Length: 51
Image 1 (cartoon, one colour):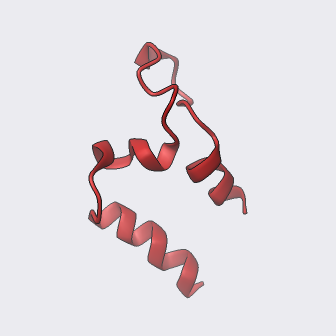
Image 2 (cartoon, helix red, strand yellow):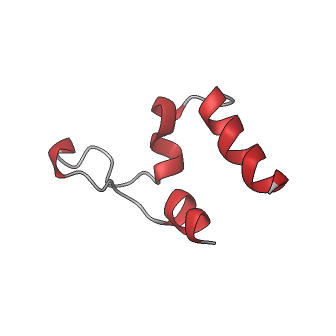
């Protein structure tokens, strides 16, 4: 549930040097510049399901 909150609900970024570029995007939307079906996204979907 913690990862769900951070990836899909929390908006913005934990880093202060982005100058607000990602304030309206969730962490999931920021990952891999918004590209779908990348290795990272597949990994982060499959591993929790398997566990």
